[in-house]
Length: 208
Image (cartoon, rainbow, N blue to C red; front, side, top):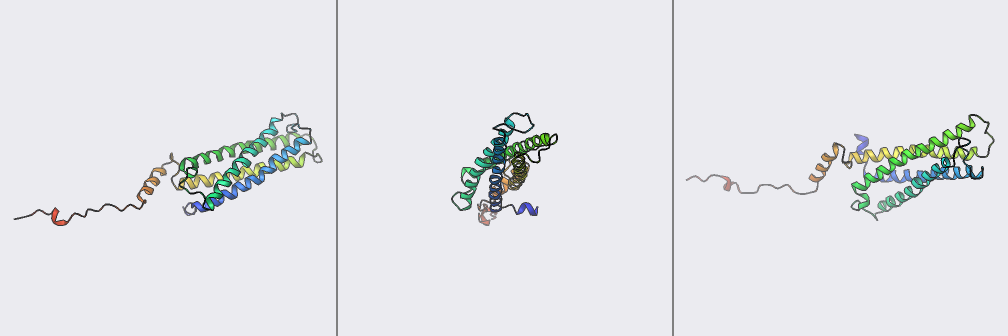
């Protein structure tokens, strides 16, 4: 439990900031790489040779929605918390919103993994049958693949970190430890236990 004990809120916030910053950085590898690849073929998607343009558009859309817009939103929120503008009492940092963000990260992980598979499989489908070493679309395609696979790994690490942190602090209601943690938190609110201060002579039986 030593590793879990080190998952305090400041360490987790910093790790989240770094993770989302990395995701924003590699989002450019994906959607710029795919955009350049399409440009080399007059707007057509070269993946799978005769595949629909949606194969390319899907990877671009996932990168823009989750790794650019959503990640930037998270960076702003977490940065404002880091500098003291936001507090844990706000709704954005409630247990419900923590669960929502955890769910979004899981969805982003799954969809980014699919995008990485589409990019890699589409590239290999062409280069496995043709010599595409000197083709102009190859470098952008490889950049997009690298960005997608690295992003998948970052999403996975981020999800594991957040899940362990929330589990450690009892923020996941359907886990067995959540009720025990909530009970412990209630007992640590600082309330002084009630002590029976009734004088002892009032409890004693008066004998004549």
